[in-house]
Image (tube, rainbow, N blue to C red; front, side):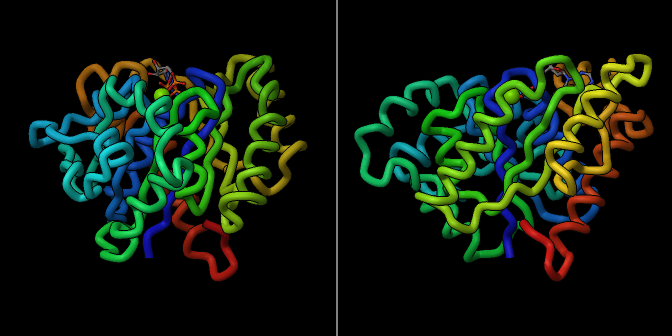
Length: 261
Ligand code: ATP
Ligand code: MG
């Protein structure tokens, strides 16, 4: 069974791509065959995970031209981790999709084959910082949603809007969608603010906050420019340990008999 998880927050720079890349690498390291679907025209996940083969087709071709997802998938340098890359062309998809049949369900339809073949245990969808058609496609295709939340002032602003969007998608387009968890990112132990934000999110979303908190670390910011996840760039760094812990926590939730996606 393939678990499809969308990594969503319309707020920019909160750690969506960092989570897709490093959680993906940590899951692969733990033996779960994983694929990252880069659904952001910024293509930051694609750049952060050097593909082993040259990129010929991208998620744009899958969404707009109906290319099979397997034909756009390439291996990364991390064993057990594949990527369906993005390119800038994807920026046009947001508009082009509007006129296509089943515009909200294009990704879900493309993922049917991936689910059938069962070659991957987990698919992580990296979303752009908006709740436009690309993010909606991710939410319609997904079983679960991971929401990264930066440990900063104003991080809770906008979460209400995001939750209402999730509820709307659940009601109209994907009844099976679950909020898998909120992930606190860029935690700085030296500031009271970081702890306050973690506590506040826990109060608003009891049981939904991941126990694992991702620390702010310089090495995490460096890793993408080397095309490597933190788990191989700095395998013993606090960031690498945190994403491994998150992978363990997520696997526990997915494997639990009554666990949600
Ligand atoms: P966007 O909304 O633009 O897609 P995003 O939500 O995907 O952004 P990231 O790109 O993952 O956010 O992170 C924003 C910036 O913060 C990046 O430069 C990234 O390297 C850096 N960053 C992310 N997490 C950490 C961390 N834990 N410690 C230090 N830097 C981090
Ligand atoms: Mg991003």
